[in-house]
Length: 130
Image 1 (cartoon, helix red, strand yellow):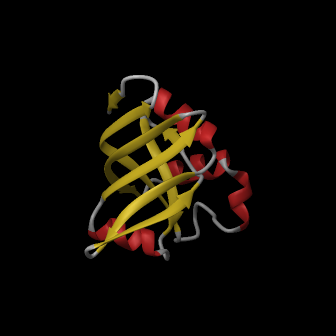
Image 2: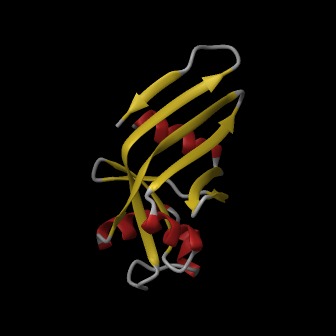
């Protein structure tokens, strides 16, 4: 999982796909964190993304750097742990202008049943599950 985290972090921006009814939805994200042995992302509860994940927790993340891309898919599980929210916001202090661990809006979600596939045009795919 650490290798997946480090790659996503080094990319800066990744794209997260969710499902809205029968329509895929993709948007850029930039938050990634490890807390209590789990890989987390962050969003706001008022956003469509949060509502879509509440209806269907299956999601896929994709990012690209230096000729290698990563696809990470699994279920994103809401974690209402204040310490997890604080850990995320401490890792991204620039978000504190919009979010606070006690604002009722900040949401952190962790990957469950995750499968990450690193791919490139020059090497065989590498799969990591956690």
